[in-house]
Structures are given as C-alpha cells and as structure tokens.
Image (cartoon, rainbow over all chains, first blue to last red; front, side, top):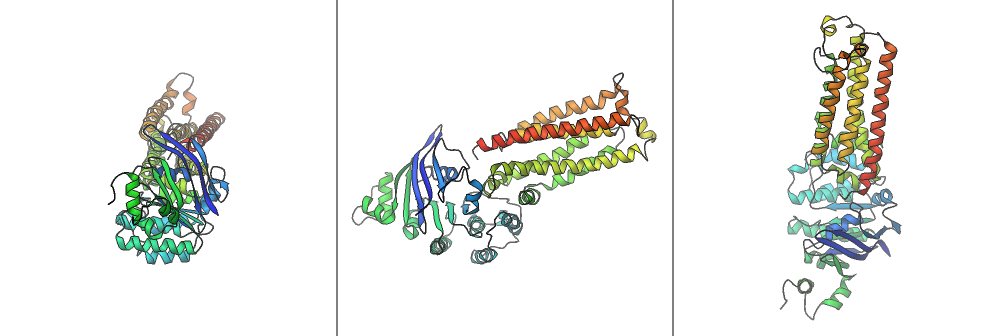
Length: 240
Length: 217
C-alpha cells in the first residue's frame, strides 16, 4: 500500500525542469531515491513537502492531498536533510525543547536512544559539530517523534563509512517498526545495501520507479552490479 | 500558537531584540528626538530577522507541523510583543513626565516634541510603519531584508521629523501639551496612534500570509 503518492509533478525553472515526476513510497519499505547531482532530487523532495510550489501534479500522503492537509501530514512525517544547518548557535537541548512542543507524538525514550546511539552531546551547539554529526542531529529530530514516513534528503552525505552503515541499519530497523523510509542519495551502494524500491531520476525525469529486484531484472546485464547498471544508464561510464 | 511563540522567543530571536526594548527609556531624555526610541527598538527586531535568516529559521518553521500562516503569525506575534514591551517603558516615562516631572525646566525648555500621550501615539505609528514596510516587505521573499529596511529607515525618519516639528506650526502648539493639559486631545491622538498601528499591522499580516503561501523556500 502506498503512503506517499507523487503524480505528474512538474516544476519549471529557467535552466531546469522537473518533468511529470510520478512514483509511490510504499508502507514497510525503504525507497532509495537516486540520481546524480542536479538531477532534481532535492527539488522533488521540496515539492513533496510543499516548500516549493509545483507547476502541475499532485502529492498525497496517507491518501490526503499535501496542499490541503499540510499540518496533519507533517505531524505524521519526519524530515531530515544532510545539507542544512538549523540554529547553529543554539544548544541542541534548547532546539529539542522547542521542537518537541510541536509534536503530539514526541517520544522521549526514542530521543534518548538515538542521542546515545549517535553519540551526540545535547549541551553542544550545531556549529560545534562535524558535518557528519550535524546530519545525525537532523536525523535525531526526525526520528524522535513517531513518524509513519521518514523523508531524508541526502542523509548519508558527509558520514564516515561506519556511521553510514549504522544509519542504513537504522533504516532497516525503522522499516521493521512499520515506518516507510524514503531517502535520496547519489551513493549507489546505499541503495544496494538497504533499499527495497528504487526511484531513479535523471535530468528531472523519472527513469525507473520499481522494486530493486524488478529494476535489476529489467535494466541490469548479466553479471552486472547495480552500480554498473546505473553508471551505464547515466551514460557516464561504460561498464566492462 | 504557544509553541510557535516559544520557538520565536527561544530560537529565532536575537538577544539584541530584547536588549533594545530599553530604548523605550529614551522617552526620559530631554532635548532629544524621543521617537528615535521606537526606531532603535525596531533596529533590534531587524537584527533578530537577520539572526533568524542565518539560522535557516523560515525553512525550519515551514517544516514544522503547522500551517504556513502560523509561521507568519509567529513572526508578527514576536514583533508585536517587543513593540508593546517598548511601548510599556515609554508609557512609564510619559506618566512620570506628565505627573512628577511635568514642571521640570529641562523638559519645559525642550525645542523638540514633549513625551506626552501624542508622542506615545506617534511611537505606535513608527512601529506600525515597521510592521507594514519592513515585516511585510520581508515576507515578499522571506530572505531579502536590506531593501525593506532601507525603505523603513527613510520613511520612519521622515515621520519622526514631521512629528517632532509639528508643534512649531501655528495652531498646532497644543500637540506639545504638558501634564494633563488638553487631555482629551492627547487621548484622541493616542487612540489614533493605536488605530494606525493596528491597521498597518493587520493589513501587513494579511498580505504577508498571502505572499508567504506563494513563495518557494
């Protein structure tokens, strides 16, 4: 069953166009949203979250249109980005104290669990954190309210291989707890490791939106790795 | 609404916004354009908008589980709280100057406007201009601060100059009343200031809500 439905999403910029983007994020699945830099991943995610206004198409969460039910949908959705800093000179505990007041479902136990897991010191300010720790802090905020869908924009960027691995394991754990995870990345091995479904975007167009197994069946040549397939499809490298 | 105000006060606000409330005490200064107190308090608010922009506050707020118009409401709510706190200090100064210090020579021999109820109404007008020109202007883009603030500076100082000079125009001397002289007129002018502040704030807020819905973050 789909928890997020993106249909015919269009967004035009002078030098870039998101062209009739459609895909689903399914319940109890991890969906990897892959594409090279500038392919339209962040634009799509911003349009999904109503941060930018699409020129056409619809986005629905839990069967309800985002535009009409923004507050309710955001209550049930977690969002994190690896690239933006929130309140760099405020202590983490002060940011958390404010954020928790917005969520009916804030889970202090989960907050403490992830705080410990990510080795975050809540008396520190985001400006004092390394890039990887900033990503973890953003994730901490998204994971501490019992969201049903987790939308993550490049969550693994800047993370060391150990933390990345740890994070991908957390995605699997969350999936087992019934959370639908949607994450964008340009690192193909992230998809290989944990994604159930693949949404592949190139130059603003969806090339494929299907399960990982079907993707491999349809696009991979015999003996070819997923990375090799994607590099070949993107036309960057011809795979031997 | 409580949570969005908490966010504004704890995360988005620059400490200067609170500190600059003290400029309301400029209403005690003799021989000084007292309405500059309202401008300096607004300067603290401007610093707060700058501080919030550096912290990606608007996008952070838009991602919270609230309607977009509540993000705008939070900003206007915070601005109004700071303005009213400044006004409270100004009011204390005015009450002292209208009673205990009404005969003080240092205030009587003042070429600039007296800090009476009319001055309070004028201060509200200066705050109203800030809400209309600067806050409203900011929400056209949710990131451009310079241009609306420059427009505000020019307009605010134009009106400060007018208000400070009005009582020198023949038949407008009463605007500079001391103590409870012409109290009905003073009260009416204060009321006019309140109405102007309310009108400018509400109009600006409505327009900002409409614009904030339309912009891409």
